[in-house]
Image 1 (cartoon, rainbow, N blue to C red):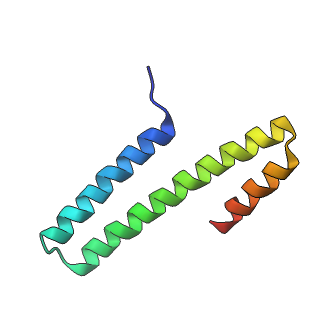
Image 2 (cartoon, rainbow, N blue to C red):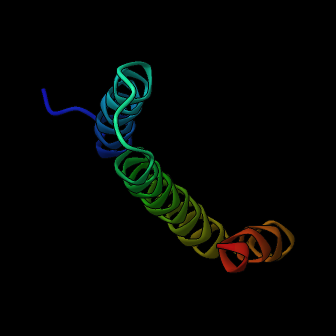
Length: 78
């Protein structure tokens, strides 16, 4: 049974963050740690966008204009 793609993305990000923590604890260079933080942040942004895009699609199908407006406000924040 295939897993939810959002859950898979979040688990991948969890692994990224565990790696960042390890790098920090092992006193890796600041630049390397920051690069990994930026990569994780970018991944989280993609998850947020995917979640909000799916929600916007659902609202459109249900013709729920008020909820769609709220979703779109969130989409454009990212």
